[in-house]
Length: 453
Ligand SMILES: [Mn+2]
Image 1 (cartoon, rainbow, N blue to C red):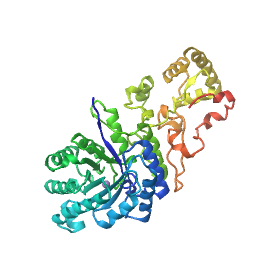
Image 2: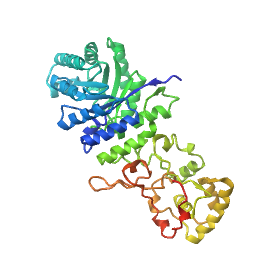
Image 3: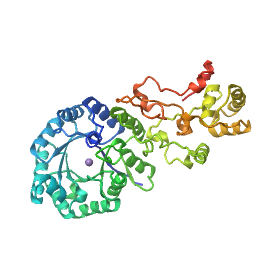
Image 4: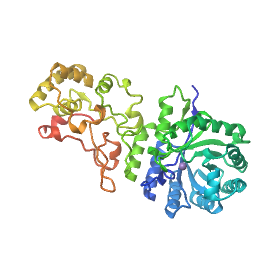
């Protein structure tokens, strides 16, 4: 199937940063921008240069050092903003000025206090001015989904004529539904003269939990750019979550004939970096990158997972960059690894009993080289060891994800809840902290540590 390429416009550093508790300094923004580059996003909206000196400096620094993606800066449709944005962006390899102006009657009447005609003129003038600095100009009619569709099309036609190359349609207040939003995109494509010269973009908010669905509906209706953020951070309930949109396209390739340049294995590391920088943890049940996203608690699910992950897993943790924390058990494994694995599977042994299991395990490992969980479970049931209650530390995470717990101290001194995956979050730590205490006291032989994580 021919796959249509969708441009991923990341606005974590602009709209995302507007969420309470998520502000970042210049160095932090630079770090995240480099990671967004590794992730493979096409456009990084680096900030709103006129908003503050810090925002200006961040956009300037990112524009100067991150050269693969397009770097966008936001500006209201007025000369001061647009000139300031250009000052920050002018050294970028691929600069984009993103001009916006509200178009809904609610905003025109109560916020801007200007009539529609003035809005129309100001939008076109703003885009013309931006175009005089920069070939790549995006225009956003703020609150588009609550704008009279006829007036919206009029404004879009005027800004395309003035040189806008991307027309972004924001659902600023997270109000629309997939069906309605798809219909709006189709109307725009049908009615706006010159629309074929521009790329249509979707910018959705999650106030009704529909941001990712609305974004996909817009793409199905002809949008070719999607605006989103890491961990779905953003104003109020947040923006459409980058990882959800990207993985929906990957996992449902059969159904969604689109793809992006995003390297999905970088999703989890990027999410972790953002959490580390902002100190705002991801909700545990967050799709794709939450710590429970690959956890299987129910016995019947665990049983299925251990027999074949396809039973309950539509994508692997590795495909989104969650490190494989499963202990590899083979003939080189020691009692320690075996003991931990047994604990993870809910069996807690005294030393003597463990020795008994270990002798049978070594015989098996000699025969089959790599002992998988279902082999071990069979062996345990044959030795009829009474299963103990799972250890408290393990009760809320998956067997696949229990090998290590990394606690990262947050800025305010609080802690992330136990993160079940080692590796990604530990970039700044010497090594992950493994929960070895329960076994370590009576296992100190060097052979006990011959195992891979
Ligand atoms: Mn927004």
